[in-house]
Length: 230
Image (cartoon, rainbow, N blue to C red; front, side, top):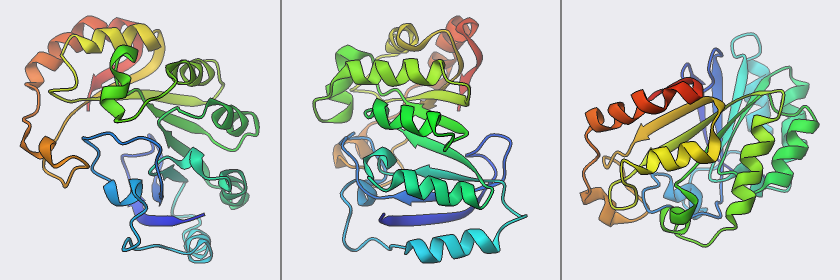
């Protein structure tokens, strides 16, 4: 397991919990608006943390942290993910998994094995625009399978979409809703260009008007228990 970063404390990334974030390297998507390209490309110059040091950190923070967020990159690409989660759970931490949903079999095994307590899945676009949004070809049936597995699970979850001009139109939000609704939580995230992005072109692209996004949210929020612009 290659760990590409650690955020020692977060109050916002794991709803209701004080947590840390562990960043795993490698991703099978190439979203042009991604701001974690060092993790995506597994940059050899990226600061890395050994598993030994990570678990030493978790042991020292027992009683101060409630949970651990595992993100990337795409965590489900790591063959060691099951043992990694077991070790974290063995220290009595709750686990939130951030995923792109491309590996439904892994997601299902993690849920059935009681190895995760919360899951956040990025739904990148309407299926007809998925390849454009992620920069590679993907079997969208697998994405839909992950959505269904998550919705039918007993754990807490959220879906989220970052909408990006030149990839999305405002109306695409409604198309995404058809893919996931009804569901517990759906968060819209407005694209930001203030970080070093995978495609430098998108650093010159302006975000959507948040008032336009809010109008659509007002129309779709009936399909979710929680839905807002984040």
